[in-house]
Image 1 (spheres, helix red, strand yellow):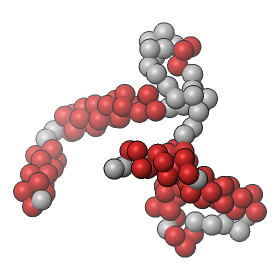
Image 2 (tube, one colour; image 1 turned 180 degrees about the horizontal axis):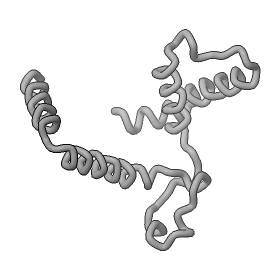
Image 3 (cartoon, one colour; image 1 turned 180 degrees about the vertical axis):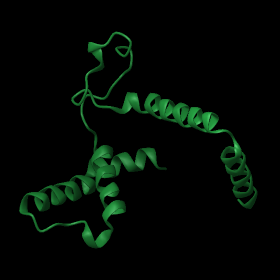
Length: 117
């Protein structure tokens, strides 16, 4: 593990010493790679790629899955911390409770059992 940390640190030093144009190009390439990897995970109910010929071959899920709902909840915990997850607004509280229920739903647990063995 230490060797990996040393290697990453050396790579960081090299990148920081590189000219700005190279760093900007690497950041742009990273963003393009992130978009390409993310495109197949966007649900059809959010954006339907069939309208664009150059994206129409990408297979999309029909709706948001339980993994998307649980990741949304986890992201809120990471951003706000455990003490600030639940709010006092009744509508927001209802959505928070719905997220917890969906996270604890048997299909969510089945998804976890299948993908995180």
